[in-house]
Image (cartoon, rainbow, N blue to C red; front, side, top):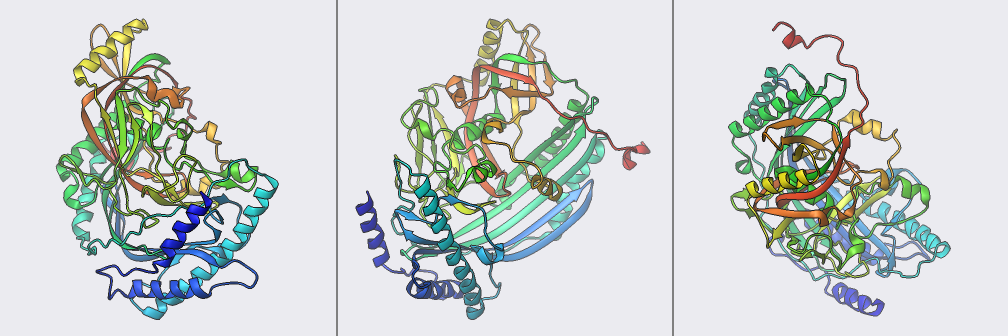
Length: 589
């Protein structure tokens, strides 16, 4: 494998920097190209390795963020930003400074592999910034490789994998994105949505946030990859918090996501969804906690999509975690439950009637725009369709250019992830699609749910329509995270708790909201316990917020699913004190 890898890498290097049509007069790309050529040929400290690989990725985007609370605009800002991310490698593709996590040994400003670039197309101003960040990244790479070699020497492993795989050259130029947003008009709409909470006295805190982003992502490396990818995002996120009668904090979070403003639901539909969310949250606040339950559970809509993302999508993501310098670094790492299925290649992970694939190139599913689409990943590799599971058996992972034992090549799913130990590219889903060759309609699934619940001698069955989704954290919540010990991977729930769930009386058919349930003893075999799915699917667009503050657009197309047996327990929460005074708006009513 080593000899073949060297030959392929040398072949790509020999091609030099190719010229992509549509970028001929681009000042930014010219500055990147000239500085790259200089660094690859001349950057070297005496008696030290010179870079064998160098890439620049620039995110050049305009964003507008509007936040409103209780009918008033809290903030409204529009910005233009250029960020550069440098991937510089020393050593060789067989062993380099990547795939290694260690503590920083100096000021982050010196060691940084990312920085801001000038907004103007000033050739020498751009080269100045590119030169400085490349120099710092080179010094950082040399130190990391030295520390990595020391760890490997003291901790030998039986099977060593190459650190970097070869890829076919990608020279794709997508149309340049132009910025166009009517800020005052969106402020009026967001304020109107936030004003809906004036109808709900039980809700203590609420916010509505809108983000509009239009960006061009430029990529250039020393192996001939040169591209421009457009990245459009438009979304509205709504967060509401309240407190139950027994003091438990309760919250809900919903979002509306698209690649364009036209792809969002009409304002009236968004208002109806927000109103329904507020009504449900108010009802939950008046309920007592539900007692533990064991029996069948039906997942529909968002809950079914989140189930597949959390158990399958995450399970085949980031299949190669880094080598950790020591146990402390490993304990502080935030795995986000990635890679839990990577040890089951070729083995059953779902029933044999289910299959799954991920294809970031899909633009629409039916009439719905797919938020997770991308045609070029963050390592400049063309995105490909990946068959994750076929007839229930695991067949693929979300791959970056970091090889694993059974899959050497990237399939174009690399996403940049900044972690507390540095940045790296990891494989993540884009558009995850679940398929089935055996389906039923939803009414038949509900009948099967009731029959199975009767076999457990239960008086009711559980239907989950929404699971807690990852949401953005406030500045205060992010601050607290630095002073709170990170839970170990074994302590992190593999499946988040239900946000909205119902119990269905098996005799009368009465449907009631339930509160305070959480899943117990969830393992990777959960998906194998699926007994039936619907023919109809839901398309779920969302923004995945990881524990490190990174965000990734994603889409899941999934059917409703019936799982024959699950254990739910009463969720343990710490009661909080309510506000001392009444809400000033509702006090007079």
